[in-house]
Each structure stands twice: as structure tokens, then as C-alpha cells.
Length: 280
Length: 340
Image 1: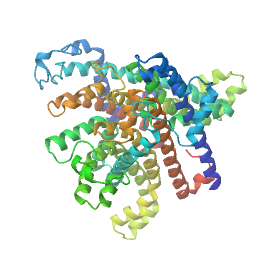
Image 2: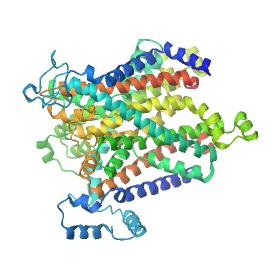
Image 3: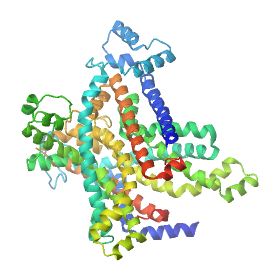
Image 4: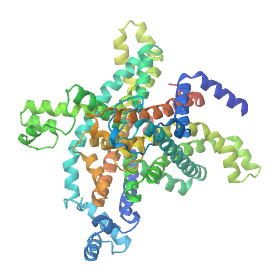
């Protein structure tokens, strides 16, 4: 196992896209952790005298319509985006994985019920389903995270179910059953570890998608509260000013793009390394 | 084939039933009183009681759901509480705008996506392959709402080539008779070429915005699918026969590698319906997406319910058509019976 992990790690290092993707992500993670040190201003503090200033030494990325420092807002915004990605994925992975394993391992009517519900969720475009959930729960950043988490459950459930269906029939699982191992033990020691590869790939790509969806919801005015340094909400707030002050919408979008690109580069590389069958 | 179609129709009916349950219970899942949310804090008690009665909220759940399904079967999706218009009428009026935008985006992404995929596959491992593949990864990671804003900044303000919003210039819009609500068709029917050109120019930036992500995905799929075929022996034979490279790739190879690309194209329609919400918001495009967004913001329940059901239905129909085409082209699907 340890040797295998080392091999994967070495293969990843050889992949340029993995290195670039991971570097981008580390960059944002460091910015998020050390936000108070990196930021030059208070991200929420308005300063009407210096409103709509362009790029300068004082304000690296300029200021918005109430004079808030855009650079500092983007730095603090990375905290929000990473939080969305991590929390939403943790939630949807744990629920999706459990549902997928139960459906695949036990089969029968349980499988049918679970997968039909998943199909139904997949019958709606993700952002629309998220909009419905936000309508039910009300508009706030927390509810956006909940909505995005729910939206991505079916993907994990499907992946896990498909893997479990194959692994269930393997000899080592039968062997475990023969020596009297409990279901829970078989699932956690024999089945789950063998589903990890597709799960890791999907989780990496999924974090980027979750951040993108959440930013989209905020852009639609259905997410983060006005004034919060959330990248999508910043775009929405400033988009009317695009002609007068293009810098106010330039950098938040680049930030979203880069962090999602980071996840996608890493996810792609992981897929190539962990799953040699789908070489593109 | 018939058994396969029946099986698919059954699963669609099940999914639609599920979605209908979801949108029905939406009203009941909203914390607090739905009537209060619709009418606002300052509503009188009488008005609240009346609205609850009107919405049937005082009836037992099963009766409410029964009535909901009954109305649904009669295409009655209720009325908007904000505009008092019939939801189904609003949907039918807004939908053509979204379809026009979606088809334009799809056309854009298919033409450029397949083109880029072919260029990448033919130049495997060379400069253009890397450029295309990096470009497509960038496209997949692109927040389209930002891309739209940048396109507006560049092509509507800095270089004023294309308009930045709406479907037609206001002055022209007044002259055109809206028979189909598809502006490209309406302007042509009116024989007004100036208006037609104007409608096309309004369509370009939104279509590019909405088409970027599918373009990237189609390019990747075309490349990998084409690469697989290019390694096969009959391609080598075709080359050996001395056929021109262009013919071998476009006629022999592309034809056999197009099926996975078709599936992706079908799947992308679902994405487009979602992406349209964002794109329409940016370009003030008066379609289903911006209408739904406004309804969600206003918590106008009936239009949300109707809109969601409608989109789900369209989405499933498109997927069904794609699956049927797929089964038609690839008999292995029919026999196996399991659609992935």
C-alpha cells in the first residue's frame, strides 16, 4: 500500500498539469490561511474618498464603488471559496458514498429506491436544482453550500454503486464473507478502499464544480449577502460599472477561473495516474 | 427496440413523478407560512386566509397533491402571484428565446468543438494539440458569467461591434410581428433583412458565452474518440491505399468516432438549460432562465414550480431522443438494455 502510494506520487510529479494545478491550489490555500497578513486593507471597510480607483501601489487591484480594496476582498474571498468547496464536497461525498454503497451492496428494492431518487435529481440542471433548494431554505451563503452539496450527491452515489457492483463479486470479498466477516467490516475493509481511485478523481473535479456553481448562484444574487467578499457576489455588485471601472469585475472572475482550473488540472492528472484505462 | 423505448419512457415517467413531488412539496418545505412569504409581512389576516384557501393549503396533503396532478394533466400550472399571469402562458412566451439562444450556442460549440478536436487529434503531441487541450481545459474551468462580462467589455464597449443586451434593437422590435417568438424566423417572415441581421448580432455574444463550456467538452471528446479510431487498421489501410489524408480523417475516421461525441452533445443540452439562466441574466435576454431567476428571487412559488417541471420535462425528452439515436446507431445498447 505504502509502495503503491509512493508510485502514484511519483507519477503525479511527472505530470506537469498536476504540478501546475497543485501549485495554483496551494497558492490560494496559503492566501486563505494567511489572509490577515496578505491583505492590505479591511475587506469590508468602505472608504468613499478613494472609490473606483484603478490599479495602484496603494490598491493593487483598485477599489470598488464604495472604496473597498478589491485585492483584500479577493484574498478574503479565497477563504469563502475554499470553505464552499471543502464543506460541500465533504458533505456530498459522505452522503453520496453511503447511498451508493448501500444501493450497490444490498441491491434489491433499496437499490431501486435510492437510484430512482438519484435519477430524479439528475433530471434537473445542477444550478436549477440548487436554485430550488435556495428557494426553500432562503438566501444565504450557508444555504448555498447546502444546496450545492445536495446537488452533487447523485454523482458519488453512482460512482460508488458501479464500483461496488464489480467489487462485490471479487473473490476476496467472497472469502471475507466465508470467514464470517460482518457487512460493515467487508464494506470498510474490502469494498471502500477499492473504490477510492474514482472517488478521489471525482472529488477533486467536484470541488471545482461546486465553487463554480456557488459563485454562479451568488452572481445571480441568490447566494452570499451583499457586501460579503464572495467572488461571484463581487461580480454581480460591480457588473453595472463594467464600462466605467472594468477592474472591478476583471480580477474576481480571474480568481474564480484560476481556482477552478487548479482543481481541474489536478483532477485530470489524478485520473491519468490512478485509472490507466482512460488514457486520453 | 420497442421494449427499450418503453423501458426508457417508464423511467422518465418515474422521474417526472419524482420531480412533481419535489416541486409540490417545495411549498410545504419552505419554513414558515407560504402565504405569508408570498404576500409579505404587511399582509392582513383576511388576505392570508383567502390566499391559503385559494392555494388549497387548508386541505389535507393528499388532496392538495391530487389537485396539483389534476391541474398538471390539464397543463394548468397556476398563476404568478406577482403578475397574475397564467404560468403556462409565460413559459410558452419565454421559451422560444431560450431555445433560440440554446441552439445558437450548440451550433457554435459543435462547429468549433469538433473542429478543434480534429486539429488536436491530427497533430497529436504537437504544439496545436497542447494549445487546443489547454484551451479546452480553460474553457471547462471558465465562470461563464465572467466570460460574458468580458465579452461585453471587449466587443460591445471597447470595440462596439455587437450589442450587449436584449434580442433586437428597440426600434426594430416595434416593427416586427411576433408570430413564432423566434426572432430569427420572425424577422425573416417579415422579410426584414436589416432586422434579421440585427437579431443575429444580438445573438452572437450570448451564444459564445453559453457555448464555451460545451465547446471545450466536445473538443476533448472528439479528440480522444478520434485518436482511438486513428489507431485502427482500416485507417492504416486507407492511408496505404494512397487516399488523401483529408479524406481518411473526415470520411473514414470521423464517421466512426462521432457516436460518443453525439452523446456528449446530447448531455450538454442539459447543461445549456442551466447555463442559460446565467447567460440570460448577463445579457438581459428575455428567456426562461432570467424569468425563473426573477421568480426565485421574488419567491413567486407557482412560476418556480411550473418552470422547474417544464425544464425537467424538456431535459428528459432531449436525453430520451439522444439515447434513442444512440441505440439506433449502436445496436449493442439495445441488446444490453442498460443505458449508461
